[in-house]
Length: 333
Image (cartoon, rainbow, N blue to C red; front, side, top):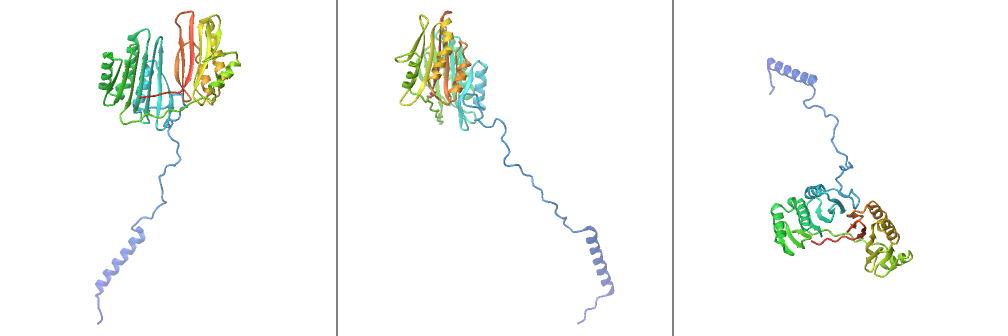
């Protein structure tokens, strides 16, 4: 059956179709064309920010610290302590701060994790001439380390234990357990944080045995029995000793004593004899540390994984004793 559409209807349809086609021709597609694809990427090999690597400082120098460790270090340094690191790595660090003020000797040794949390501490204060000075120095170090790490209430427990005067006692706390030794002129506090293990310390020894040390010193006219000794002047002496097990020497000491005018110039000579008789890859660093500390004062610190000390004693204007010691660190908490 044929379909008839009126002329008016056909006209409307044709006009609508023309309008639609005209709009597409003038305005383009309904969706815009996609432009060039852009990305915002960061280089994968960008360098780390300076100071983020906790191993950046050579052993013996002061590496990075944050949190509790940073606070304790800054407070101790502000009180005249000199600090250095036995090691400082990605897992944490072992730091020692040492102070010599006349007859008063003090040290604050602590281990801390990479976030600065202190997990072990040993505090010592010694003054054979003035018991009060030993106590005051100890208390200042206790507060410098403990107020932030242990908490003020736990520091107060230790302070009360010191006042009790007991020779030895254990002190429980929310931080961990402490062991206090109090001999009046010498105080020591050791403690470890609950749930944390202390870090293993490096094992250090020279590539020289005690027998080899003595043989080398005999060739330099030392009289070697238990230790090797030479006479200085009428009453003084210089001596060198090395202690080790079946392997190399683990503790090396060199000492002079006698009239100050004779002992002081002999000190560089005995150091030279000691270093000349042993071998170690750390020898240059160790020698440099001692060479910089020949002023007749006492010092302590860490160099290349060793604990190093210079102990000077002047009992009178005429007498001088100076001892240099290189040894392994011990840390029992």
